[in-house]
Image (cartoon, rainbow, N blue to C red; front, side):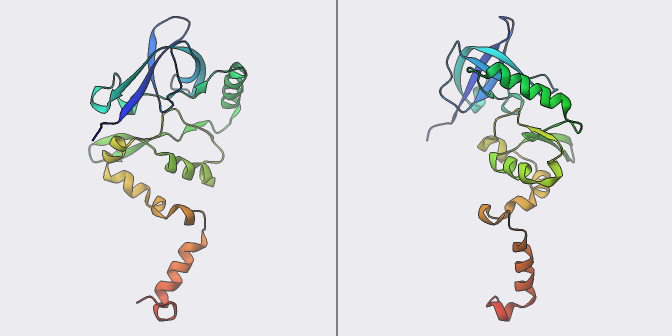
Length: 189
């Protein structure tokens, strides 16, 4: 069995020090201009890729849970895309909410959990988060990250256990409750 390889891009800003970013896209090359999240304020900036390397989970140059992701190639509209993102971020009264990472309280203190693509879709549809400017600074969780999650996260995400095609149907819970109340009529025993 082959170990999964993670793509890391070294990105530099104005020829200064380079920083590691992660991606699942194999199309990035040295010299590409890319949009990446910078600082803890959720802003975007343009950088240039100076290295592209693949690593196994045990050899990554910067921890998976700490490595932010490349947003996209900069392209023709890149600067306008960055400006629009940063302007929207500064105008949002509720502020930004990074749905790619959450802190979970455990018995040993707080642990950061990187969310999966499926969990992020749930957050995007949840009305509770609609007043925030939702961003994703980290790539979706990989199997190693999911496997190492604390049990407290699983408890917090109980509602995500509903099958994907039923998740948005709020009446499913009510039907299940009625079936449990009247098992003979529904053929459930």
